[in-house]
Image (cartoon, rainbow over all chains, first blue to last red; front, side):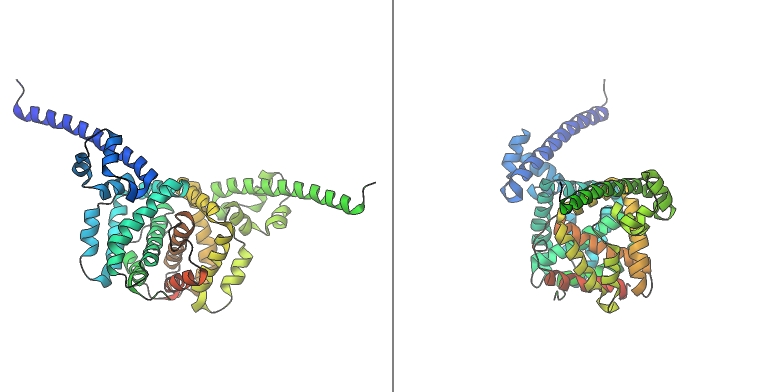
Length: 203
Length: 203
């Protein structure tokens, strides 16, 4: 006779395997749908249909279309963390919070995933379009628009340029001393420039 | 009978073809040599040997080891122009001159070559190492060191992060409005941040 704990573990393992299949199928379907129709045009219903699963599985596995989109880009970001970390606190400290979160996320995953993402964006117009949408809908719409006094899109693109450039130099190019600099050094150097892009005068 | 002008043109074409073979052989040899030994370790003599041509051809076609190195990276830069444009004038305006020259160079060639360069750096450690050497020897040694009051390497890496990020967003990602913004707008937005990296306080 199998003892209850073992049976439960076995059942859980089985369920998890099936769940991971569902998750992978949704990610694959999402990549096709977002690439073909963009973030706005894509629907959760059609993605689920492509994946051959119930639309409720999108909420179950990703918490919604937005996080499914981010996951399909393979950016190790959790939109809830982003909102919680970036949108609370003083608007004059948003530059500091952006650099801090960026370093926390990418120091953990290292340069490999970022290099893959950058190669993808530099090599495929579909990936570039998805990244533009990511910046446009999520970064601009959710974060920069909350603090920027004007020229929201330009400010968001400028923030993007500095953040992407930091990622390239620290993780992909691995140029010293920025590659190994500790967080306080990087934050002190870069946050004021980000803050100017967010809330300072641009001309 | 062939008229003199035609004969001269034919001879010139012939000479140019042979010259272009020499140039291409030197570039191919330089890529191998710089990849294997780095900028300092590589010698003009050994590159010429690999290419099967006289070492004098390096000066003839590239003006020296430095420009051969830049050419082998496929960056559309002419070191003489860089020195002339960047190192004359007020040190407090270097940020403006860097953005201006960067826009002039890359607006002309478009995003294709830059995307290829970035894919290469993100995909191959050898390309990343060559790019690190390029920034280290030529950008830091020749430009940033002339104006930075301290922390020369950190300042150079920070300048690199903003310049590379601008290239990614304007030309590769093509994120609006930065992708189509006119030069005065881009310069007004970005030059002050570069200038802070070059000569401002970093902490």
